[in-house]
Image (cartoon, rainbow, N blue to C red; front, side, top):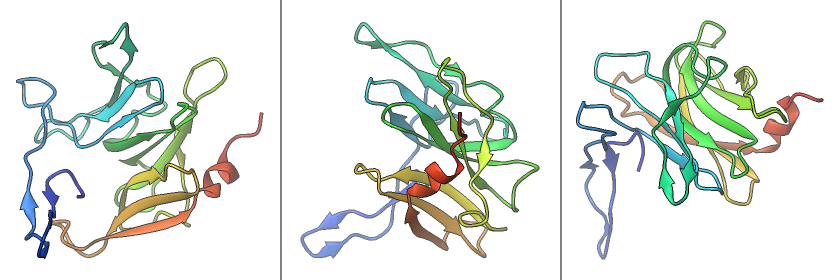
Length: 181
């Protein structure tokens, strides 16, 4: 259900006990994916990581002639900092939400957004600010299918992610920080 390795299963009696799921790998070199997000045109955006490596990039893979191309790392405008994770691409690819640890952050992991320019290049990552980010760990932002709400997770007071809560805000926060051309 969250963080890629734990979930609950709905049963006839209610909810199951907490289950553990092993992360999917990109290849046989132990490169794991925590989140995969897809645009309307089928382009995948996903994080990749290897154990004991905090510099893993967010990548994308376009759907061309019915097949996904080899993954390509996004540019430094997005892939700056450490623990770059949980990308969420807008259906039209106009923006990408993700979390990272950066020097301009509020503490642990913060949620950022990058907007795609008309020329197809990505803009610098923008911290979503103190309405979302705190000195705790914020991550896993996503937008509801109707575009109205932004959901995200926050872990407070736990190094093992046992105290993660889910929050939501009006998705208009995105428009309030979108650069004006």
